[in-house]
Image 1 (cartoon, rainbow, N blue to C red):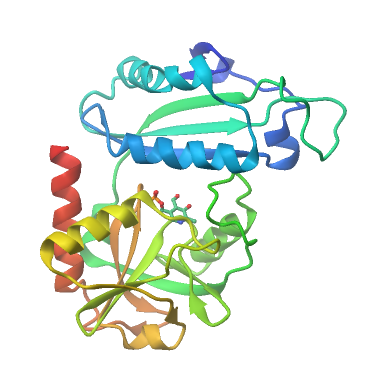
Image 2: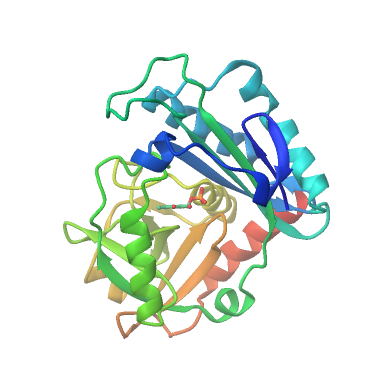
Length: 283
Ligand SMILES: Cc1ncc(COP(=O)(O)O)c(C=O)c1O
């Protein structure tokens, strides 16, 4: 696999970062995952806007020529890794760069950020998309800036570990009695025909797929309510689903052993899945 690191294309094995890198030492950086479909990058502009916003909030200087070159770098990696046909993902990570001494405060502005871009094949898990997953709830132990897509992912990693240990298919995180989101996806519930999801806030990442779901809902005449769903209330939902770049729209058919709706993917979920697939295949 060919990757891009700090201005150089190389094989994955030859790419290495400094031990002084603040991404490595502090988790001081942000990332994006973008879907590649037949060589095209789905919703690239939205991902770049979210990245620029995160870099701005964190004051990581990544502008000018290097920033402008990113789409071309992704295009070259797609070609070099033969991803012009079929499905893939771009992984993009920008950290505050390598700086000495190791102090918490931001280093001088001239410190170049570390920029890593990788392109890999991706195979959606068809079975869970068709049949749905048996999800679990875990406490949302994350910080109060979940709106930033930072590489500080330990609570998410722990949630994924719990999912694996319990042989579950999906995790719903709970903060103050309400479902916030998954560890790598947003959560939607269908209640009396209305699509509920947690509002934009510092407690969730505003997913690009979530925005696509809003678009499809509007087109299909499905009402949306930006309102948190309670941890007990969700058991009574007619449908529940997870949405994300590598999740697509995954039905949730049970939560902590409670059956959701009829215990199989519901009609609203299926309509949204079709709408997303159509957009991914045609945009
Ligand atoms: C915590 C979290 N929420 C939501 C999402 C979904 O965002 P997107 O649809 O942009 O992939 C992600 C994606 O990785 C995530 O990590």
